[in-house]
Length: 323
Image 1 (tube, rainbow, N blue to C red):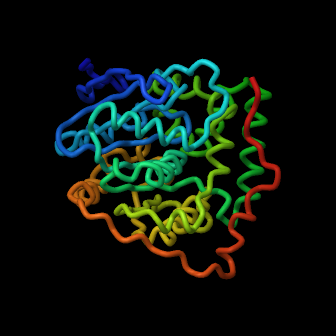
Image 2: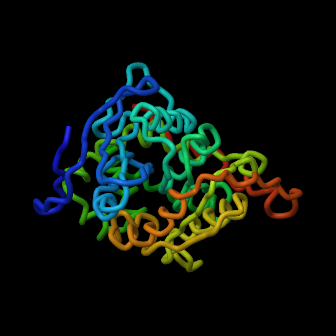
């Protein structure tokens, strides 16, 4: 079904094919807009296709842009008896969607937790991808700020839960991630859907995402053309989310992939959507034209700091909440 997507103060953005489809034991809502090589966008926390409306509109003149509500988020209903949210299942959902719509191989872009899902997708279903762009993957455990950030997350989530349950916790989390101005500028309908996803985010998803960490040997076997991206504002060691820049460099090193900077910080799809689209456009073009699989890189001998990165995960950190 074709539908017009409205954002902001009644602003008409684009016409998208909007539908839902059954894949991998879940019913997934998706939006497909534009014409050309297909680009899949995978959302992180709150998992809504609407994260990519403006980016997709900007790219639709040259690309077919596919976005979707991840399982149990927004317009994708929660499957019966679904009580865990492993990253591998999320990757299989994305693979099932691409297969069911007969769109593969595609270029895929994942942001934050979506970049972690994309890592699993690249490992489990490489034949479905022409290339992958990982934007600030939230590999907290490999960074020097793991304990500090883990404690701050627990504080924010605990405060929100005590004050108003999952919706308030989600708002505090999103303000911390994106900033107050970006959060308040979100389309009200999108923001309401995002806040409604807090139970799934904190009850099931967040702990799975933050504890997922592929081994150097697994990453060395990735044969796809890859790019890792990070927000320019997070390059500064004093930035609140410099740890995400650090995690991006960690992944780029292990994938032997270039690290490119995007405008803004962690969520340029909210703060700089048009600029993000134009930054991505030439990168997408190169990846979409790729047909050769690069040779896997063998991991270097484990030495020094790299050997102990996994040990930086916050001790006993659990972000799940039971509802």
